[in-house]
Each structure stands twice: as C-alpha cells, then as structure tokens.
Length: 302
Image 1 (cartoon, helix red, strand yellow):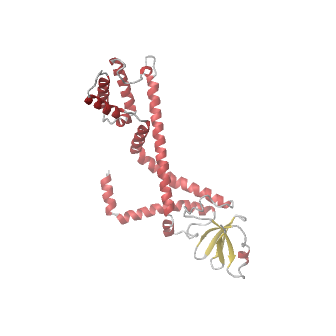
Image 2: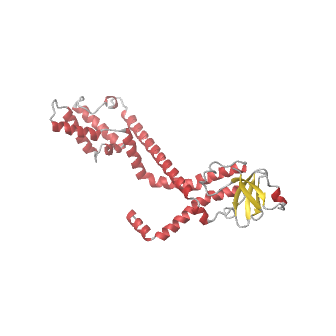
Image 3: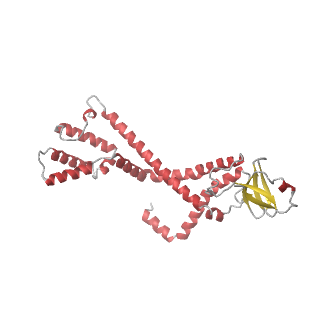
C-alpha cells in the first residue's frame, strides 16, 4: 500500500500529470450538470458555446462555492453521525446497567462519600462506559483507563484528607482539571475520531453523490424553471457555468428576416451562442430557436 509520504513525493515529481488529471476531473464535475441543463432545453454544451477551456476558466467561483458547501455540510453530517453514535452507545450502556441490583441508581459521584466497595463498583461501571465511549479517556487527558483509575483513586485519597498541604491542594487541582468532563469537548473528540475512522469513505461517497446526483438534479430543476418561463434560482449570481438569461432581440437591419421580426418583444431566454447561431428558448412556444449571429441584436431585459 502506498503511504502518504510516497503519495506526496509522487505528486511533487509529477506536477504536470497531476494538473492534467485534476483538469479532467473538474471538467467531468462541471460538464455533467451542464449537459443535463442544456439537454432539457434541446441543445448541447458545445452548441451553446461551452468548450473545455471556457468551462474550466469560467467556473472558479462555482468550484469555490461547491467546495465550501461540501466542507460545511460534510462536517455537519459528521458531527450529526458522531452524536448519534454516542447517543446509541449511551442507550446501550444505560439499558445494560438498569437491573434490580443496578449500580445506576447509586451512581451519583466517584467521591469520598461512598465506601470503598461502592467506589470500586462504580469504577468498574465507569470502565464499562469508557470501553464503549473511549473518547472519555482522551477527554480526561489520560492514555489508558488504568491511568484514569489511578488519578481518580488519588483524587479520592486527597479529598478524604482533613487537612491538605499546599502541594497536595495543587495536585488535587491538577487532577480535577484533567478529569473535568465537557459535553462540547466530548462531541468534538467523537467527531474527530469518527472522521479519522470513516471520513475518507464518507467523503468519497458524499463527493460522488454530489457530482453525479446532487448537481445534475439541481441543473434538471433549474432547466425546468426555464421551461416554465422563469429565471432559475441563482441565475443572477453567476455561479453556474451554464446559463439561460432573460433577453430581448431586435434585427440588425430593418429588412431583417420575418422569423426574427416575429421574435421582437417576446420573452426569450439566451441559451448560448457559437460562431454561427444565437440560441434562444421561447417559453411561449416551448421551442428552441437558432438565429444567425449576424442578423440579430440580443439585449438583457433586467
């Protein structure tokens, strides 16, 4: 198996190849939703003037927005799943602890107010919790439960002293800080451990789902809005590499073609343009219209 150091060395020594692969990957990511969008409107990305170069060069903002949204939603999903995993583990612990002679009812604190036998029982119960929720050990700044147990026994010993020296009081303060529990810290640790264990698999599935399901679905819905005669949500933000801008047209000369004259004053969407044609969509007739680029003037109606 290739380790991380070997992978980094390979990337450093193969910069051009990496950039090529990255360019192809980005082209696939961006071209899939564009193809879906234009297909619903009766054209292809190439016909609409969307080339490999223009697709990549004109999509910087879209890529950054996609990455930002992916990162935020991925971290939110990871936190949610980590929280659910903790919740399920705690439920299992509680259900196994609630018995006729359960420790649960008398598990109030690991302090000096209980006798030695109860303290040992409670430590074993805490050990069971730590086995199912190992993040507790890390949160308490110990490497193992054995170290945590030593610290808790020492804390019990110090708390049982009637009078403590300055050194003993300082030691007790340190032990109290180390064993202090915080739910926010616990959730943070669980999320980090969960991402470390499952993050790569989830990130891969999430990324592929976004590329081949989420973005194409969004493009399909947006094209549907154009088919219904409305500008799709986000068209004014310029985030997407495809477009359907609400425009008006007028002939270049008074002696323009009759077909172009019939489009004047009608609501139209500019779908794209190539060297030969301006491609428009008419929601009134639900048709895609191609007119020569040399015979028409297109103006935005915003």
